[in-house]
Image: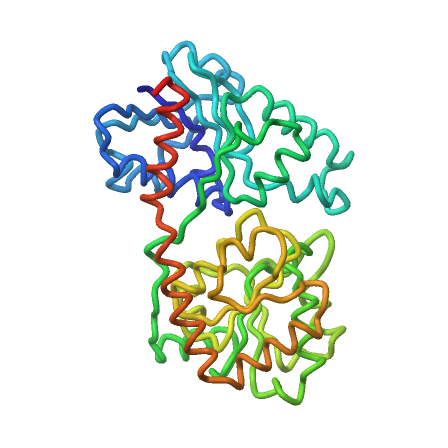
Amino acid sequence: MRIGIDANPIVRNRGGIGWHTYHVLRALVELKDPDLDLIAYVSPGSADASVMHEPWARSRGLTWRETGGWALRWRGTRDKLDVFHGPNFKLPTVGRFGGIVTIHDLWLARHPQFSRKLFGQWGATRRVRRTAHEAARIITVSDHSARDIVAICGVPREKVTVIHNAVSEEFYPSHDLLALAAWGRRFGWTPRPFILFVGGADPRKNHRAVLEAYVGRREQLKSHTIIMVGSPTHRFGNLCDSVAAAGLEEHVVCTGPLSLADLRMLYSHAEVFVFPSIYEGFGMPVLEAMACGAPVITSNTTALPEVAGDAAVLVDPDKPDELADAMARVIHDSSLRASLREKGFQRAKRFTWERTARQTLAVYKEVCGG
C-alpha cells in the first residue's frame, strides 16, 4: 500500500498543523507496518531541514521526495500511489484509490471577519468545499469539526472520520525551580504564583477576556502574575496595547513565542492554565497543560469540552465574569487544584499519537479496499 503525504508543513515554520503532520507521519513510521510504503513530499531545497536528520525520518518504509507545487499534481500517477493524503486542507494530487484530506477546523468560514486574505475568506472556503467533495475520505480532529464540515461543505457525515489529535511525550511535569528563576531573569520577572495563558494576540484565543477577568477580581488575584505566551501582535489586536488599556502592566508578562522546554516549564509551574478560546477545532494547549500537571480552565464551546472532558473547569468564553469566578475559585481551592491535576493527567494519557496513527492507517486501508 503506497501512500503519499504532503509533508511541507513539517519543514516550514511549524505551527499547529505542522506539529500535527510531524507527529502523524512519525507515528505512522514507528508502527512499522510491513504493508505501508510512505512517500513524504516536500518543496525543493528541504533536504537540509533538521527533521530529515532525525532517526525516524531515515527509517525503512519512508521516502522523502522534493517536488515543487505544480509538479506535485503528477506525482500520484508517476509514483504509482494508492492514496495521497493532504494533512493541510489541500489535495494537490491523488492515487489510484483517490485522496484523503484532513480538514482541521472551519474557524474562518464561521468567522470570516477575522480573515487576513485581501479579498476575504469566501474564495478559500469555496476551495475547501470543493476539496471536501473531491476527496475519497475526509479526516478531521473532533466531532465538532465534523459537524462544521458537514454543515458548511455539504458532504455526508459518513464521509468524515474523526481522529483526535494527541499530546507529545515531550510534555510532562518539569519542576525545576532554578530553571524557573533563570527564565524569570530573562524576562525581568521574579517568580511568584502565576496564571498562564497561551495564544498571543490572536483574537480567537480571547486574551482580552483573561485581562477583563483579572481586573474584575483584582483584589482576589493580585498576588498572581499573568504570563501570556504567543505572538504579541496580530492584525486584529496587540497584546501590549490590551495590557496597557487594562492598566495591568505591573501584573502581566508578555513573553512572545517560547521554546517547547520553556513552555513545558511554565505549564508545570502554573497555578492555573486559562484557555478561554472562542473557537477550536481541537485545542492542543489543553492537553499539553494537563500532561504537565496544570489545572485547566477552558471554554464550554466548540471542540474544547470534547477534549477536556471532566478534567477542566468549563466557562462561557463570552462572559469574563464567569472566567473571573473560575480563576478565583481554582486559585483559592487547593483541593480543587489537586483534583484537576489528577484528572488532567488521566485525561491526557487517553490521547496518544500511536492511537492517532493506527486510526489513520485504518482509513488508508479502508479507502484502498481493505
